[in-house]
Length: 55
Image (cartoon, rainbow, N blue to C red; front, top):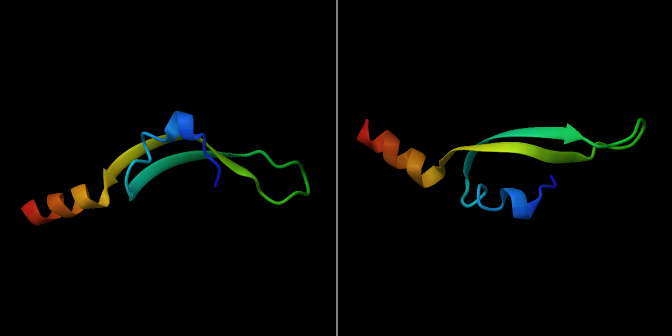
């Protein structure tokens, strides 16, 4: 999936869970061409594992 690295590169800093909003830029009859428009980091896997250990 395409995303603008200059816009979202700092957000996608580590493997984890993200809430991502996408838009399909394809014309009618074309294969889907999704592009990321907004993203919110829920947590990196390391952070989520540490939180689970504490509880």
